[in-house]
Image (cartoon, rainbow, N blue to C red):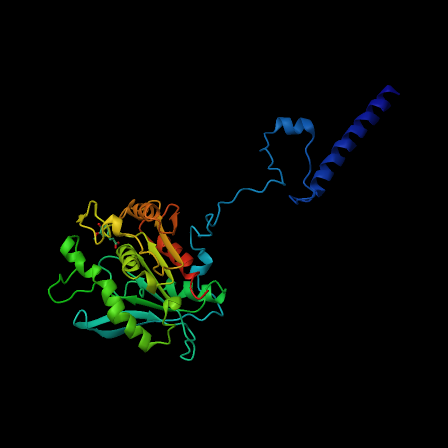
Length: 336
Ligand code: FER
């Protein structure tokens, strides 16, 4: 009898164990609702990572600052899409009375440019040693603009990329890191206003007044953007200086000593002057070329009471990340 009882208990135990194993096999793998909860003792024995409470969202870095400036251009705006038409840069010439020579620019017309419409224009100024081809060589610029227009982030506009080195008779003929060779860059605002703008206005279907006129630039082009702004504030609706190079005001860096195109106290708008709606200054946090000079312009503008937006592009150097970020914020102001 004893033996029979023992045999029966052993059999029951075997059945139980077998049953447990079967259950385990049937458990659906890893579904959210059916994840088996291990017994208390099991939890203590195996080191489980602390589960993240489901009601606390993982913090994501902010896309914009408190003024709505995007730190970076979202990558989907730099990627070609099906069903969006993109414009193409073309290179054109005009005669400059100011420089007494033929000069060049590239122009990106809207993909479906229609001469019966009036478009705003954006002048975009290249960096030192650049020319009219500097931006035109970048296939992502037409993509960025086409995608922004397609998503209604900006209106259609005409992008004009001049050759900024406005050498004339009796001036240096090629850029370099010295004061004399920088003079033709500082002649650009006059060349723009006297020669290029009238040429653009009569060649394309442009909204000719300040409402439709915008200027931006990178590095040396950022510096000349700010200088153009100071000389002709009434002409522009929006302005964007991306990583502006030193030299609009006196400065000294590893490249050269800048006498300054303006004294710091001259960086002011006369009372009653019509000024742009928006001025953006930005720079990468790791800019290895212009360093903290853009921050210096921001501080000077603040000190002199010039209202503007300043932001930094996290982790960016003197590079395209900074430029696409600046363009993405700048272009959103166009045609609005
Ligand atoms: C300078 C530092 C930077 C300077 C120009 C630059 C003429 C321009 C850099 C660029 O355009 O990328 O001191 O002086």
